Amino acid sequence: MHNFEKLDVYKRAVDIVNWLYDITKKYPRDEMFLMVNQLRRAAISITLNIAEGSGRTKKEFSHFLNISRTSAYECTALLQISARRKYISAEELKYGYKQLLIIIKMINKLKASLK
Image 1 (cartoon, rainbow, N blue to C red):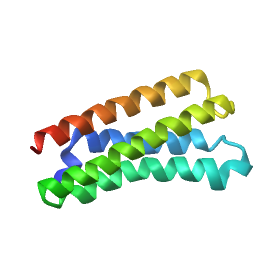
Image 2: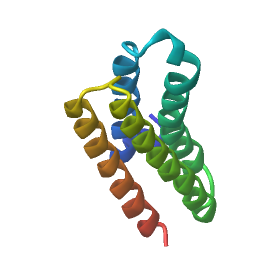
Image 3: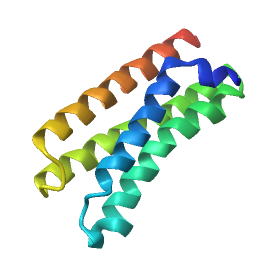
């Protein structure tokens, strides 16, 4: 097992990727190459940047965590758009928003621990 796989924030990020893959299956077909693709890529970016950054220096890891956090913000915005377009329910938006907020806070704490 790699060190990043032990991080709770990484585990949560993988969970949100799986959840987003599940909910985006019901999006309209014409959103497959725009909204669905962008949402999935942003979610995957959260996990990949945690993984890649963990093998770098503290300064570089902090930079990768910034990218990861930015991707979480992107997911949040995309979920809000999805809710307005009625692709997801209010409950799904609330759940996703809460999970992403937790991930963002965990990233912030991990960044602070690198100093």
